[in-house]
Length: 507
Ligand code: ME8
Image (tube, rainbow, N blue to C red; front, side, top):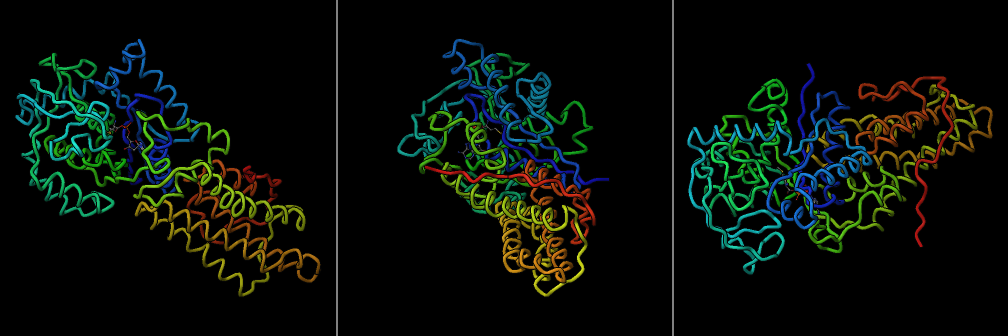
């Protein structure tokens, strides 16, 4: 039986259309999902939308539509965006789905019945745009530490979840699972800022707005957003009504999230799961933010373009490649169109595109587009072949450590070696000498075979381009178990080379 792999993105707020920051997380999750599928896992990749809450209610009111009408439109747009980015999700969860609503009500009731949720009064400092409560000490200059805006003092009857009860168990879990929170710096931040000072019970219902899941045994309350939102990762698998998918996929292998919501995923979520007596996710990775001019890209600040503008201008794989390659995963990074163009030109047009184009063109010119098995091997071949042969293992190590940008860089390095190999073996010189025909065939075989292997390993990152290359090669050896050097068939009729990436000229 195949091993399973369950990966999730956050479920995004459909308060406005999505921007390149949402694409960033989703592209990385997609690359992980595709990589695991390629390597033989039974993958469940989930994304979706977090549709309740005061902010959405307010936005809809301003737009003169119902909250459902408001979110429906944005979700249609989001699905279109994911399609244009080739996001291969298995399930798109919406928190307004009837199944989700009913299952959250059951989870809430269960926690209430067993005494983990109780009724009390909430007084707190609340940031509406971020939908977050803050303690006095967390505020920066009296304002929300995430967005810098005013917070308001709120007091109301509310239900609470006994987070404090799980504090010791949570710390123990962190200790016993050193890879639970990555990067490591985020774990220390959680312990120092939130857990060691003492966990407070968490307010989990609201009476001040209605756009939420009603608490079925006390309907003037709606379930406050984090219980509703976090449950998505299990309600989508049928919990608590049907355990077929739960048995197959739970616990999640990886929750990918931006750093600002790590705390919800590594404190509230594990405590909820402990209360429900369910296993905890294996890993939560909190990545950095993409910034524009050093500031956060933000829906509420509106300082961004529709990502489809970049896709239309430069191609889907240029955007995917940039998102995956540019920023060391975990760190913040700047997003700029110039850098996207630079990356596309240097890595995709020059290194990859040129290599494929000139190699296949030479095969057409010198051997009528037929592949020939190697016959005359020289020392210079060995270095290249060794690099290509070890690439699978190197990429696997990097991907398992979520070092996606480094995995890609390793492949690029091999492609650069191929270009260097062409310069050093000078096939056009060999072609002038009849007696060097076998040597020429060998050089071309080594190049085509290296390209095939790199194309397969690039498929999680730039799937369209990978397909195009494998189609040009016309090979049947496209699966992960054909990565041994030398599998490329003899006498394949190569297709005509096409331009994979045009160099983008800037004014
Ligand atoms: O927080 N750089 O939804 P959200 C990188 N509904 N990633 C970014 C980004 C940026 N500039 N901006 C957004 C929510 N993201 C909740 C989540 S999960 C149970 C509930 C990505 O619409 C990043 O993944 O505010 C971040 O964590 C997420 O979008 C926030 O999306």
